[in-house]
Image 1 (cartoon, helix red, strand yellow):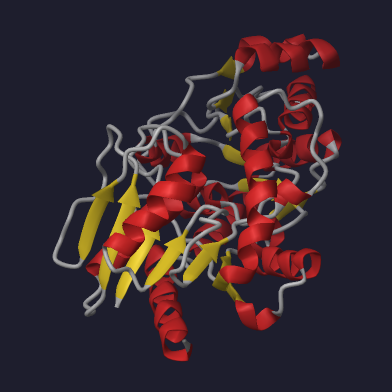
Image 2 (spheres, helix red, strand yellow):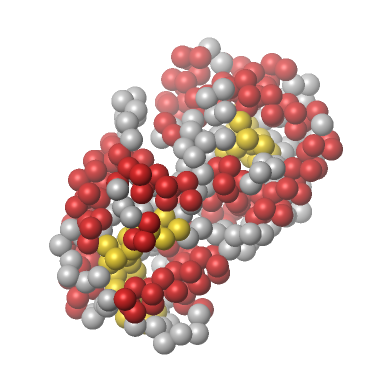
Length: 368
């Protein structure tokens, strides 16, 4: 089979969630012993993280914008190379395409009410693009893949898609996420939080929770935050009168994925307190490193974290703060949560993800 995979943004230096998902899927498919040929369609950029091999051909398509690349350049290139099935991996796909398609629809957050406080032009444009494109492509897709049972049910209910057209395939995590030798004193190690300006990440309530933690803790651990706009931070601090957190924050900016295992392993605990996630790869990454995780009792997070995870109401800063203090004050509970995470993470892998993808591609081919 000649299978096309849309991976437009995987060559960019600062990758994000969906970029990592398709990158790892491609790398696993590349290792499989099959007669399939994969055509990987990407936009040129500085991090050439996939190379050609006997069964993988990297096709660079230079186009000035995301929509033009996807709607014009991608379907033409797929047709040129004789692709029999085109897998679009990042929620959207070409509206006009004669090739059978598979769509990975990670979530349908773009159909839910939009937080009017979100001033990010990039996020708002992406939200609008998805609202325009997704309803026009769903009926053209042979299968719609999503990444958790929570999201599968959500998509079926809100978009009226029958179950036989859906496929649920869990994400995995990179094998370099495992416990690392710690160079930090456990008594003074930090909390880690991947907050940003997206309202669903719940940054404001998490910072309020951290302020409450500092008021009650005798250890007073620092908080490491990645990739947060400082103007946004100071707005939160001023609005909530939590100036006490400012001397306790470390904000290094964007953290490359290959540096995260050491950061997780040196952290006292990881705060994954989003309001909503379709899967939650950072949750897996932290657990695989043996780092206790405080996560939310909403959307997919109980499904991925498992029945023994620390689950809190993400809208309650008191609950978040209380569990931070619980981990700090109860060593037995803390060690139990380390083991809970390590065992849970064993259920997921990119190898399993790629095998399920391969089976799905061939199932579609057989029924055409």
